[in-house]
Image (cartoon, rainbow over all chains, first blue to last red; front, side, top):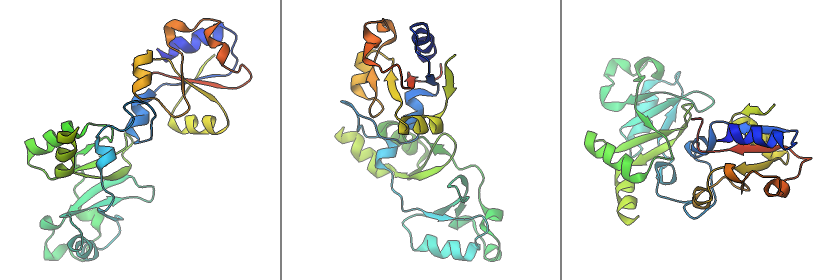
Length: 160
Length: 67
């Protein structure tokens, strides 16, 4: 639609026209604010928390495990300096011999993620189906935004 | 020739005063739209309707997605 609209405006004499091709869904997928009657629906992005342990790939596993122990999670998320999600370190999968290694060597490379505009109901169901407690929320480019808890999503979905 | 842009350029243009236009139907706009965007559905892009736009400023259009 927007490409045709841009051509139409050009026909009408407008000189400087841009087409934000990824569109509204891209905006929502970056967890950016919107206006309107349904501007604040219960979504993973609205409900996520920002208290998960973040570490760098070069951080020592022993230090990461200590941080995990002091957190409500069983894992830490490895990011680069821009916040890009690189992997996940799960405490239960680390052995004593891993403690002196860098997190980047023991992290799982493929933790599943969700986009922030996904509805609380959808994500809660997905987590329940897999018996997961948490969903890692990232932008479409993979930048870490936070972690949504199944109990929070379920509660919001039932209220909504 | 209209220029295709992504999110970063969108922020830049809006920050510089570009006009943001959602071309989806009014009902979809009412539910949720980007901050400061106005609604000019594609089917209503006539000379009289676009008179609300400032021709001296950049215009950024968007719909739902790239499809």
